[in-house]
Length: 492
Image (cartoon, rainbow, N blue to C red; front, side, top):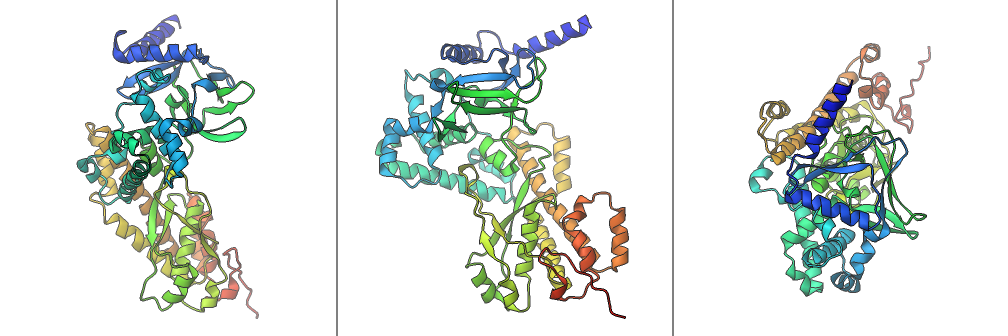
C-alpha cells in the first residue's frame, strides 16, 4: 500500500514538473498565481498543469469533497463587457451605435487588444497566460487543412465565420479609424480567445459577459463535474464541485451540450462520441412541383430550408426534418397544408452559433402511405447526395483514425468532424430504409419485426405510428393530429 502511494506521488510529481523550473512557461504560471493571490483569489486545492504549448489544465492539488467551494475569483479580477465599453475604443464604438454581427465578442476583443498593447496593464499576468496561437480554430486553417473537410457542410460555416469576423472588423474601423492599428488577423485571434473563454454572469443584478482568470482554464467534460456563478454576497465568481475529486485528477467545466460544429468552431476541438452531434441538411422545394406556388406562399418564400439533424431518431430535430419533408412531398388539396403552421425558429441566434438558421415548424404528422413513401425516399436521396460529396467513406475515415498515428491535431479533428457527419447521414438512410420496408409489409409481419428489435429507440419515436399506417387506408380521416393511425374495425 505504501509502495503504491509512493509510486502514485512520483508519477504526479513527474507530471507536475515536465518543464525545468526556469522555463518561461513555469515563470508565467508563478507570476499568474501570485497575481491571483495578491488580488484576493482563493484556490488552495487546485494547481495548473502544463501539457503542451498553449494547452494546460487544472488539477486537484488535494482531495476535493463534494459540494466544496473550489475557486473564488473576486470581482476586481474579472473583465466585464462594461469595462470594454468604457475603454477608449469601446466608448467610441458604443457612441457610434454600431450594428455588429457579434457585438459582445467584438467589444471584449477590442478591450483585449488594447490591454495587450499596454506595457503596464493590470491584467498582464493573466494576458501572458492566454494562448499565443489559435491555429487549432478552423478560421485559421491553411488551404491544405481545409482540404481535409472537402464535402463537409461545416466548410461553408467556416467561410461564413471568416466573412462575419471580417465584416465586424471593417464596421469598427470605419467608425473608429484608430482601431486599424490592430490587424484583422489580431482581431480574429482575439475573437477566438473570447469565444472560447466567455462567461455569461449576473453582476449587481445585471446580465453581463466576462473573462474570468483561472476559471477559463478548466477543460470540457460532460456530464457536469463543477458548477459556477457570480455570487453577490461574496462579490466574486465561485466554482463549486458536484462530485468528490481525488488528488491529482483533472478538474473540468462543462461547456454545455453542443454539436461538434460549435465545439470545433468556437473552442478548436472535437468531442469524440458526441451524442449531440448534428449535420445541417438543406431541403428545397422542386420547381416542377404542381403545388410549388402554393407551398412557396405558405413558407413565405424562404427556400431552401436548412434543418440540423442528429443521429438519434428520438430527437426533436428528426421530427422537424420529417415534418417538413411531408410538407414538401405533399400532393393533394392545398387546404390540407394550411392546417399546419410553419415558422422559423423563435430561438434567439447566439453569437457563438451564427452560421446556420435552423427551420422549425409545427409538427406535420404522417398523412398517407403515398406521402410517407415519398418522404422516406427523399430522405434517402438527400443523405446519399451529401455522402457522395465527400472524398472518403465513413469506413475509410475510421481506418485513417485507427492506423495513422502521425495525424496532426487539426487533421485528426477534420477527420473526426467529417466522420461524425457521415455517421448521422448513414443513420438517416438506415432509418428511412426501415420505414420503407415497414410500409411495404403486412401489419402482422411489421409487429413481429418490431418485437424482435433490440434498439427500440430506432422505432419508438417514429416507426410505432408506421405499424398502424402500413395497414390503414390512405384516408386522412384515419390520422389524428398526433400522427397516430386510428384503426377502425370493419363492419361485418
